[in-house]
View 1: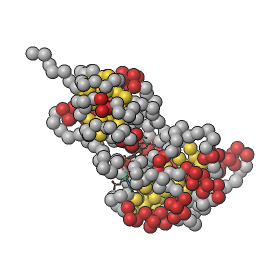
View 2: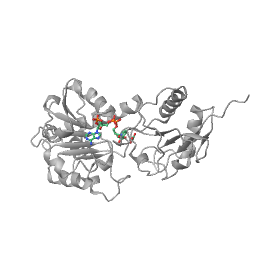
View 3: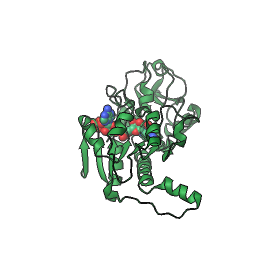
View 4: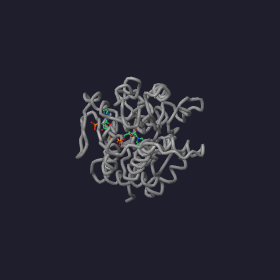
Length: 319
Ligand code: NAP
Ligand code: GLV
């Protein structure tokens, strides 16, 4: 008797930020991970799983036998924006290859501000030999907004240097050596923080949260002068114009931004030239396509063996 046909895989990348593979190219990669089944780029009744980043609205609803959707990244806001998204498990990418890249970005940016990288680059450009003050790690409190997989890994990497670490999350999730704040504790968290690091998902609740009001609540007289904001979560969590204004009038001493409300960041956006503002192009933690392919293969094998999918998004919370 012929083997029953296995559910096929739909790859639909859509317009991406960070994952630059077109659907056709990506499909070839996923075909290597799934040699036993068809990998397609158009919806059909045979599709059992979809791999996507920014699916065209309504496209996944055309796959009537869909069993699960896999996001190409850790975030899922771009998938959830489809009002007709089929009601099947949505799985996000959680993997050491991605986590370690984000940890690198956070540590890199913390040191950039602590050790005055932008100011030293300017002095070198001018050919000026001048020592700048740089506070020791023990004198700086880093406040991580969003204490999930990435926030916790960043804290673990920063703690051994001696930084004070505060963490803010909905549930007040904690860790040894970290001062935790829950949803109600935002103001206290901000008042105790010199460098705020946002690793928040984009949800209705986090929209525009890094704004003038939040900036005004950060610890004012710190060893870096003004407080510093880092954001590698999502651009929708920040009001770029508020950050720009605060950098220019000194309410903020610096910023490192990887994500923006509009990506790519338009050429005429004033943030490009804001003082002590480091911009990276949504590149903090780009998905490794091979690691993603292996991750999805493991998950599909597991679910077809009757096990649970991992890292399924809670659609009610939006992350
Ligand atoms: P995660 O494990 O789901 O963690 C999310 C954290 O945010 C949790 O601690 C959660 O609180 C907290 N949170 C959510 N809504 C909140 C709210 N309204 N108030 C306070 N805290 C809130 O996610 P992750 O894997 O760490 O990833 C975080 C985000 O990073 C992703 O969603 C994505 O947007 C972004 N990202 C960016 C890049 C890049 O290259 N720039 C790469 C990967 C990911 P609870 O713990 O209480 O649930
Ligand atoms: C990248 O932004 C991701 O969500 O993984």
